[in-house]
Structures are given as C-alpha cells and as structure tokens.
Length: 285
Image (cartoon, rainbow, N blue to C red; front, top):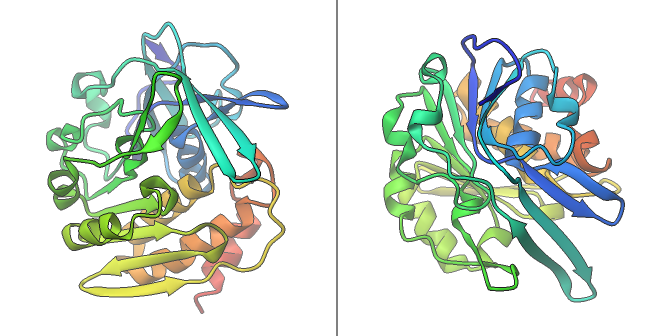
C-alpha cells in the first residue's frame, strides 16, 4: 500500500477514489478525494485520505502537503473520467475504474476521526461502509452512487436503492442538481430521509433542507473559469462549518460563498486561499 506520510491521528477522514481527469490541456488530478481533502486542509484540519491510485500521473499538490496523509490500496489503474462539452451540455465518460475500498483498508489509527467524509465517484465504496465507524459527523457526497454508465462509458444519472438506509445514518449529505439529472422528486425523497441535505445548483448557489424547512443561498456573482470541483469544495467547507458551529444554515452560507471563489481558477488552483476563508468567516458578522 502507498503511504505518503506517517499515520498519525486525523481530524477529517475522506474515503473515495482520486481520479485522473482527461482534459484538452492534458491529464490532471481530480476527484472528491483531491478537492475536498485540500479544502479541509486549507481550513486547518489534519486530513487522511483512503483511496486507490494507479500512479499514471503525479499526485501533485497532495503529495508532500503538510497535514494531508494518503493511504492507497494497490491499484493497476486509476479511475479516469473525460468531460466532453457540447452546445447542449456536458457529456461525461468513464474510461477506467480503480478497485473498491472496504472498511479493512482504513488504517486503525484513522477509524476514530471526528469528521468522516465518504465521497465515492464511481460506486467504489459500499453505502454501508459507515457502519464500522462512529464519527462526530458523518458527511456523505453520494455522487458516485447516483451515476451509472453504458458500454461506451457514457455516464448518466441513476436511482440509488440504498439512499434511505445510507442517508438516515448520516449527519449531513451534499448532492448537486446535476447528480440526479434535475429530478426534483428524487431530491424531495432524499430530503425527507436525510437529517441535513444540501443541494448545490451551480451559479445559482445552493439550497438546504433541514428540520422540515428549506432555505436558498445565493452565490455571489463571479467570473467562472472552471467549475470542476466546486461541489467538492462546497462539501468540505459545509462539513467543516457544520462540525464547528452545529448550525446548518451558517454552514450552507459559508460553503456557498467559499465555493463561489473556486470557479474563478482552473482545477485544483480553485482550492480556497486563506484570504478567501477569512473573508467568508467574517461575513457572518
């Protein structure tokens, strides 16, 4: 197994595949595990990532980053996506998938992390994985359970049979409207099951379902360069702020503002800066 650092206790444990994203500019590191881990670290947390990585390209800013430790199970290939942009919208393809991640792959030193973020991107984690942990906050980003692909690798939304069981265990979950193909009935069903459900809506911001109530959070106007990873940045910021304040409304406000900064820069360059974090924290006053 690949271990890029000493296995010390972590505050934020993220389980899910890193991805290789094929772009016109070449391959780059991606996936919830990359964007959310770097965001959690920027927020001052010690981060552990359990993943599967085939080594096709450099781990870039994750490798050697103080405060982030990677633990990878053996893999001959990395989960690989390609986005094709057309006049009618984005078409996504998945070309390869890395091995599944199970509870026994998680180092014992990390199993008591106070924040557990399960973030599959290609169904690589069982929705029942969380049963082996007892975190203070269990956060889910179910994107990888809400997608399937055909024989050509074209990705499309799908139903999630385990949604009720998984969401009822979680402290909070974050999805995007795109994850469910805009299916409002599916969002409504999740909102009725989840304790807290945040739904990101791109440039429009986000909505939050909590305690039978719904509130919308408008994103500030920015010049969008690349929206890749914005939802993962939102998720990590949301889980962090929810854990520290116990206030879902404030967590959604903070995450919406912070994620809006991320789209002004491409790829992992969109990870929040300290100035952006402080600006969003101060705005609540």
